[in-house]
Image (cartoon, rainbow, N blue to C red; front, top):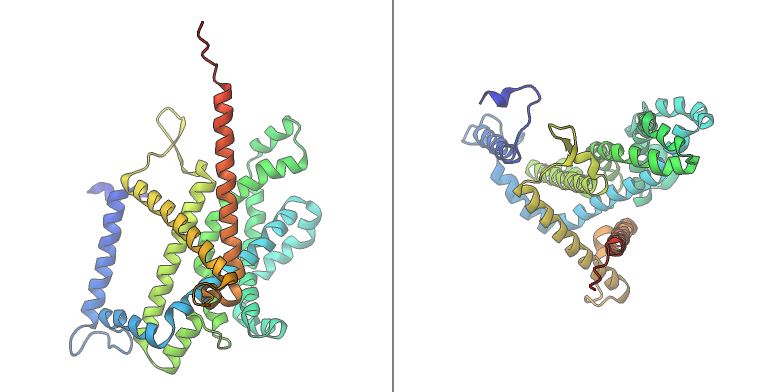
Length: 363
């Protein structure tokens, strides 16, 4: 048991899973203990009982359009991220790579991080109104001011040995950016994006509190402040946590797909090799792949329905995502492009391998 208290010790996948489940059970047990009885340690107006929070989901579904509000917030989160990344990545590379732009703007970018975002909501209302456009741009700005300096920092962290290698073989500036800077920065940037995913939900709650266009943030204000339903508030907060965990798992899976070298380990002989997957990893890999194809098929059906209206003329994507459905199309079309491109690349690789094999000609 002493190994469990080793500083920065590693846990096997099975052990970590068991401990995580035990941790959840301990938290729930404490929650039950302090909220149970006629005179609980914490009264229900502060912390409702777990069963009451669970039952609140039924009321939220019937009375507060829980599913539609959840998808609106999810669409807003993804749209804000997409817009922020489309702006931040090219700006970050320009400022980080070229001394002229670094000298002009780097100090200013560092200073912008100290702007309290909740204080500039009035400016975004003046600029974009109180609709979805304001919320998406506000969220994109909140992500941009934190992510832009990080990209510049990641560019500075690119190891000189790779740069010297490509310069030695005569690579141009564009080839250096494409083969060294971009892969190196993006592989590190995925970890930063995962961290900012949690922070972005704070901005969503602030943005959705403005106006009455729906979303989980607006739902929290409505059921918490106006109705005084603390149990509903906790139910929505737990749902946001669940969505955040799922997003984090998806980012981790994408990270392994795009940057497998990050998950290599060193053996005793100092040779790199891929870490051997556990049974749990294999099961999760299969589940993720299956769900990917299921969601792609579902998207194709729903996208066709948006045009043809064969599902009782109900446009489901418009109903769920509203003005942010453009980012759903962007994501799934990118997935389809990636799958097709990967298929053709693997096919070409197999054909090249077959051509490279010596033919067995019998006499």
